[in-house]
Length: 214
Image (cartoon, rainbow, N blue to C red; front, side):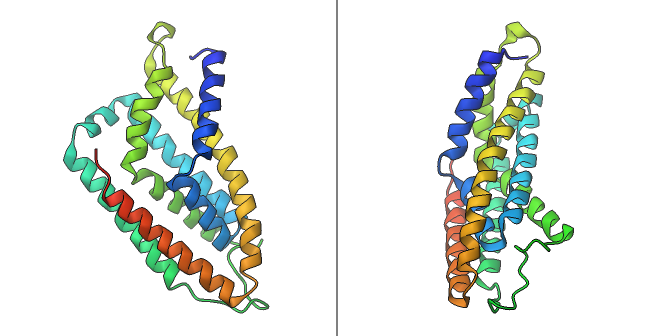
Protein backbone atom coordinates (compact mmCIF):
# COMPACT_ATOMS: atom_id res chain seq x y z
CA UNK A 1 0.00 0.00 0.00
CA UNK A 2 1.16 3.61 -0.52
CA UNK A 3 2.59 5.40 2.50
CA UNK A 4 0.35 7.77 4.52
CA UNK A 5 2.41 10.71 3.24
CA UNK A 6 1.82 9.61 -0.36
CA UNK A 7 -1.90 9.19 0.24
CA UNK A 8 -2.16 12.63 1.84
CA UNK A 9 -0.33 14.26 -1.06
CA UNK A 10 -2.47 12.39 -3.55
CA UNK A 11 -5.67 13.35 -1.70
CA UNK A 12 -4.71 17.04 -1.73
CA UNK A 13 -4.01 16.94 -5.46
CA UNK A 14 -7.26 15.08 -6.06
CA UNK A 15 -9.23 17.78 -4.24
CA UNK A 16 -7.62 20.46 -6.40
CA UNK A 17 -8.36 18.49 -9.56
CA UNK A 18 -12.00 17.98 -8.55
CA UNK A 19 -12.33 21.72 -7.93
CA UNK A 20 -10.86 22.67 -11.30
CA UNK A 21 -13.46 23.39 -14.01
CA UNK A 22 -14.28 20.33 -16.08
CA UNK A 23 -17.14 18.32 -17.62
CA UNK A 24 -17.87 16.29 -14.48
CA UNK A 25 -18.30 19.11 -11.97
CA UNK A 26 -20.18 21.17 -14.58
CA UNK A 27 -22.47 18.18 -15.09
CA UNK A 28 -23.13 17.98 -11.34
CA UNK A 29 -23.87 21.71 -11.13
CA UNK A 30 -26.37 21.64 -13.99
CA UNK A 31 -28.19 18.50 -12.89
CA UNK A 32 -28.44 19.82 -9.32
CA UNK A 33 -29.78 23.17 -10.50
CA UNK A 34 -32.44 21.51 -12.67
CA UNK A 35 -33.44 18.58 -10.46
CA UNK A 36 -32.30 19.43 -6.93
CA UNK A 37 -29.50 18.57 -4.53
CA UNK A 38 -30.59 14.94 -4.10
CA UNK A 39 -30.38 14.42 -7.84
CA UNK A 40 -26.96 16.07 -7.86
CA UNK A 41 -25.77 13.71 -5.13
CA UNK A 42 -27.11 10.75 -7.11
CA UNK A 43 -25.20 11.95 -10.19
CA UNK A 44 -22.09 12.32 -8.01
CA UNK A 45 -22.43 8.72 -6.83
CA UNK A 46 -22.75 7.63 -10.47
CA UNK A 47 -19.63 9.55 -11.46
CA UNK A 48 -17.70 7.88 -8.63
CA UNK A 49 -18.93 4.45 -9.72
CA UNK A 50 -17.61 5.27 -13.16
CA UNK A 51 -14.24 6.08 -11.59
CA UNK A 52 -14.20 2.55 -10.18
CA UNK A 53 -14.30 1.25 -13.75
CA UNK A 54 -11.47 3.52 -14.87
CA UNK A 55 -9.36 2.61 -11.84
CA UNK A 56 -9.87 -1.11 -12.42
CA UNK A 57 -8.93 -0.69 -16.08
CA UNK A 58 -5.64 0.94 -15.08
CA UNK A 59 -4.93 -1.63 -12.36
CA UNK A 60 -5.59 -4.56 -14.71
CA UNK A 61 -3.63 -3.07 -17.59
CA UNK A 62 -6.68 -2.68 -19.82
CA UNK A 63 -6.22 1.07 -20.06
CA UNK A 64 -2.85 0.63 -21.75
CA UNK A 65 -4.43 -1.67 -24.33
CA UNK A 66 -7.21 0.83 -24.90
CA UNK A 67 -4.74 3.69 -25.25
CA UNK A 68 -3.02 1.85 -28.09
CA UNK A 69 -6.29 1.34 -30.03
CA UNK A 70 -7.41 4.39 -32.04
CA UNK A 71 -10.65 2.60 -32.98
CA UNK A 72 -11.64 1.95 -29.34
CA UNK A 73 -10.87 5.55 -28.46
CA UNK A 74 -12.96 6.86 -31.35
CA UNK A 75 -15.94 4.58 -30.61
CA UNK A 76 -15.99 5.52 -26.93
CA UNK A 77 -15.73 9.26 -27.50
CA UNK A 78 -18.50 9.28 -30.12
CA UNK A 79 -20.76 7.23 -27.84
CA UNK A 80 -20.13 9.79 -25.13
CA UNK A 81 -20.80 12.70 -27.48
CA UNK A 82 -24.05 11.09 -28.66
CA UNK A 83 -25.18 10.60 -25.07
CA UNK A 84 -24.50 14.24 -24.23
CA UNK A 85 -26.37 15.35 -27.35
CA UNK A 86 -29.35 13.25 -26.24
CA UNK A 87 -29.25 14.88 -22.80
CA UNK A 88 -29.17 18.28 -24.52
CA UNK A 89 -32.28 17.38 -26.55
CA UNK A 90 -34.06 16.28 -23.35
CA UNK A 91 -33.15 19.49 -21.53
CA UNK A 92 -34.22 21.71 -24.43
CA UNK A 93 -37.64 20.04 -24.67
CA UNK A 94 -38.19 19.67 -20.92
CA UNK A 95 -41.68 20.89 -19.92
CA UNK A 96 -42.08 24.03 -17.85
CA UNK A 97 -44.32 23.59 -14.79
CA UNK A 98 -46.29 26.12 -12.81
CA UNK A 99 -44.28 27.35 -9.85
CA UNK A 100 -47.11 26.99 -7.34
CA UNK A 101 -48.22 23.48 -8.33
CA UNK A 102 -45.04 21.89 -9.64
CA UNK A 103 -44.17 18.49 -8.27
CA UNK A 104 -40.61 18.52 -9.44
CA UNK A 105 -38.19 15.60 -9.19
CA UNK A 106 -35.99 17.88 -7.08
CA UNK A 107 -38.44 17.79 -4.20
CA UNK A 108 -37.90 15.57 -1.21
CA UNK A 109 -40.48 13.24 -2.80
CA UNK A 110 -38.07 12.24 -5.56
CA UNK A 111 -38.58 8.50 -5.81
CA UNK A 112 -35.97 5.74 -5.85
CA UNK A 113 -36.44 5.07 -9.56
CA UNK A 114 -35.68 8.69 -10.47
CA UNK A 115 -32.59 8.64 -8.26
CA UNK A 116 -31.40 5.43 -9.91
CA UNK A 117 -31.75 7.13 -13.30
CA UNK A 118 -29.56 9.96 -12.05
CA UNK A 119 -26.95 7.49 -10.79
CA UNK A 120 -26.97 5.75 -14.18
CA UNK A 121 -26.64 9.13 -15.89
CA UNK A 122 -23.48 9.84 -13.88
CA UNK A 123 -22.02 6.39 -14.62
CA UNK A 124 -22.57 6.78 -18.36
CA UNK A 125 -21.22 10.33 -18.35
CA UNK A 126 -17.99 9.14 -16.75
CA UNK A 127 -17.43 5.81 -18.50
CA UNK A 128 -17.99 7.23 -21.98
CA UNK A 129 -15.32 9.89 -21.51
CA UNK A 130 -11.99 8.45 -22.74
CA UNK A 131 -10.18 11.52 -21.41
CA UNK A 132 -10.81 10.32 -17.84
CA UNK A 133 -9.33 6.92 -18.63
CA UNK A 134 -6.26 8.48 -20.24
CA UNK A 135 -5.83 10.79 -17.27
CA UNK A 136 -6.00 7.94 -14.78
CA UNK A 137 -3.52 5.95 -16.87
CA UNK A 138 -1.03 8.83 -16.63
CA UNK A 139 -1.83 10.00 -13.09
CA UNK A 140 -2.35 7.01 -10.79
CA UNK A 141 0.85 5.02 -11.55
CA UNK A 142 2.98 8.04 -10.57
CA UNK A 143 2.03 7.45 -6.92
CA UNK A 144 2.45 3.67 -6.93
CA UNK A 145 5.78 2.30 -5.70
CA UNK A 146 6.90 -1.18 -6.87
CA UNK A 147 9.08 -1.41 -3.75
CA UNK A 148 5.92 -1.47 -1.61
CA UNK A 149 4.39 -4.53 -3.26
CA UNK A 150 2.05 -5.24 -6.14
CA UNK A 151 1.00 -2.22 -8.17
CA UNK A 152 -2.63 -3.21 -8.76
CA UNK A 153 -3.74 -2.93 -5.09
CA UNK A 154 -1.90 0.37 -4.77
CA UNK A 155 -3.64 1.77 -7.84
CA UNK A 156 -7.04 0.62 -6.54
CA UNK A 157 -6.31 2.35 -3.22
CA UNK A 158 -5.32 5.54 -5.02
CA UNK A 159 -8.49 5.35 -7.07
CA UNK A 160 -10.50 5.07 -3.87
CA UNK A 161 -8.83 8.18 -2.47
CA UNK A 162 -9.58 10.08 -5.70
CA UNK A 163 -13.22 8.99 -5.50
CA UNK A 164 -13.44 10.24 -1.91
CA UNK A 165 -12.12 13.64 -2.97
CA UNK A 166 -14.57 13.78 -5.88
CA UNK A 167 -17.45 12.77 -3.62
CA UNK A 168 -16.67 15.55 -1.14
CA UNK A 169 -16.21 18.28 -3.75
CA UNK A 170 -19.06 17.29 -6.05
CA UNK A 171 -21.38 16.73 -3.08
CA UNK A 172 -20.75 20.28 -1.88
CA UNK A 173 -21.38 21.56 -5.40
CA UNK A 174 -24.65 19.62 -5.58
CA UNK A 175 -25.93 21.19 -2.35
CA UNK A 176 -24.98 24.70 -3.43
CA UNK A 177 -26.34 24.38 -6.95
CA UNK A 178 -29.53 22.69 -5.74
CA UNK A 179 -30.31 25.64 -3.48
CA UNK A 180 -29.65 28.10 -6.31
CA UNK A 181 -31.77 26.05 -8.69
CA UNK A 182 -34.76 26.20 -6.34
CA UNK A 183 -34.79 29.98 -6.72
CA UNK A 184 -34.83 29.75 -10.52
CA UNK A 185 -37.52 27.07 -10.51
CA UNK A 186 -39.98 29.39 -8.79
CA UNK A 187 -40.82 31.03 -12.10
CA UNK A 188 -41.66 29.57 -15.49
CA UNK A 189 -39.17 31.88 -17.21
CA UNK A 190 -36.44 30.78 -14.78
CA UNK A 191 -37.14 27.12 -15.57
CA UNK A 192 -37.10 27.80 -19.29
CA UNK A 193 -33.84 29.75 -19.06
CA UNK A 194 -32.20 27.00 -17.01
CA UNK A 195 -33.35 24.27 -19.42
CA UNK A 196 -32.01 26.19 -22.42
CA UNK A 197 -28.70 26.90 -20.71
CA UNK A 198 -28.32 23.25 -19.74
CA UNK A 199 -29.02 22.13 -23.30
CA UNK A 200 -26.46 24.54 -24.76
CA UNK A 201 -23.80 23.44 -22.27
CA UNK A 202 -24.44 19.78 -23.08
CA UNK A 203 -24.11 20.53 -26.79
CA UNK A 204 -20.81 22.27 -26.10
CA UNK A 205 -19.56 19.30 -24.08
CA UNK A 206 -20.64 16.91 -26.82
CA UNK A 207 -18.75 18.88 -29.48
CA UNK A 208 -15.71 19.11 -27.23
CA UNK A 209 -15.69 15.37 -26.63
CA UNK A 210 -16.26 14.55 -30.30
CA UNK A 211 -13.23 16.67 -31.26
CA UNK A 212 -11.00 15.13 -28.58
CA UNK A 213 -7.70 13.74 -29.87
CA UNK A 214 -5.61 10.95 -28.38
